[in-house]
Length: 285
Image (tube, rainbow, N blue to C red):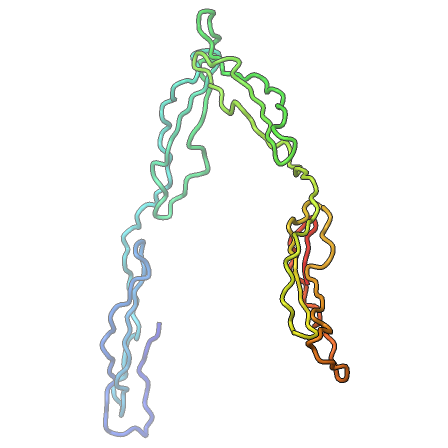
């Protein structure tokens, strides 16, 4: 906290006397606590200093006051609800089980302690007395053993095999019923089936084309593959196109021995795409 006090001015002060003056007090600040006792502040400043032997300001420039002194609300701890009554017993004799549960009645608030880790449901034993001779006993359903796997339905290409079992004893007196499947199926072969090999076969030759020139020309003929090879069968061998000369040296043609030009073949084309992706195919050029 800051304070002011009067002091003796020097002898050189002028005759224009002026007393010190404070500004009005500021608005009170917010309280530092909402309950249990806090503090609030307000301030003022000197607007005019004392001059020429004027009276100096007396008092503090800051004030403090208590606030919100009422007691805070009590913290509320977490609480469990009471246990529910025990449920029905699963057996009338020879020992059964029963369940009871509870919930959280009130969660922690206002800074209270949370519930300690604990169970919300518990299981207990009941009707542990032995069954009398006249009391029917519960019997659960039972299965027979699985049969042997049956023969595969195919020798290649993905066959199936199955096995089965049945109910040996039905549930009685509230026993548990059988659960599951009566028949089980599995793959028994993934071996690909073999197919007989097939050799490639040429189709018949097409007719010869017309002669390309009246003198010293040529003509061609072609053939196609009639049957493609399969499963590593023999491939076709030989040309798919033939060429021969025609009308060479006929009486109607002049003798052009000097400066004559012989026939020339172009370069081979690129190979075509293979006719098969596996087991042997063919391509042409």
